[in-house]
Image 1: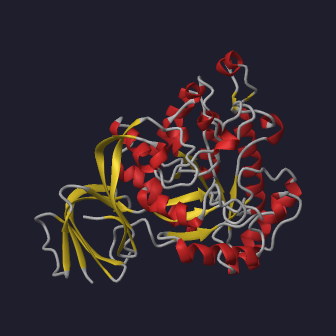
Image 2: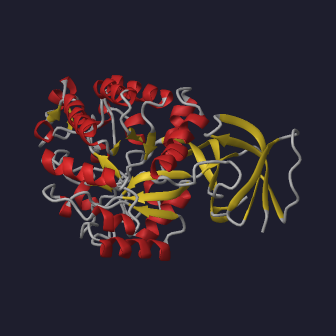
Image 3: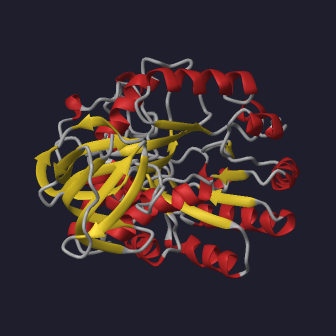
Length: 427
């Protein structure tokens, strides 16, 4: 059935445009778009008046942790899929740090099949780079790639053995496989739970210097120079790491970088009351770092913005700050949190969706993230100005560990469309 969305504010990250117009799709594919009054819309079977709402490519979220298998009490594919749809996320790219670890084709095929059965959005799995995430022996990257893995990562566990990592990068390069690393010097960061500095001392918490991120990135860049592999830094959160990233890109290395929405919208001072929902990995940074990485997203130096969705149950969060588990859920809060940057005048909507939709799609070789003809009809319809107070008890995720609980926010998803089908909301 051919569908037309009219009177919409089209956010096109590929063209970098934001204009009033229409969009038609059929059979799960976008047929055409046009500016209001400039081009006639095609004849269609059904029409929806968006009444000025924004229409953008659906969010492609890299680094989503779904705790299935092993810890379904924290998050299942069903609840993660519902949360994604409610948050305008049309594609989730899942992490391999489950129980058991996704390091064999059999486990990978299980989670892929499970996701297709119960998840209303698209799902692409990542696989472990080393067996058991132990960092001492690389996985069968070729077999895992054949089974559907779109990237390889040990998530937040740094591969400390440089010989193992260099071999894995070399093998990944021969298969044109993407490796995702976590830039951090593990010795410096061991036992820390906050960014080091005066505030950490005043709070009596063990801190880590921002240089730990820079040192970890420098090591990984050196290995990229040696191997020529495709590499993505999962999170670059400090100003000190940005010059090294910029040099690596200028030197022609195949490197991209991401950051979580929490590091773009929160800072270390939010930990003042020892609220463990603000404990994430890496820890929240100083305000100067936050402003620097916002500028890096605006310039394109940091390519991707994600939720880094990490569910944790109440038992692992209701502990003293130093002992509590790290991580926050973010599938449903990614878009409204991003609207904070938009309303502050720091990032416009095409730039935000370039980082949340287009760039992750391009890095993973996916056709999504675009409004061009023949692109998948994976869309989010949202009101960037709609105000609300977040109530974590109403989130679709099984775990409710969000730092935005009780926060005043703007930006509501009105509808999410995957492959031309409405999977959330209505118009």
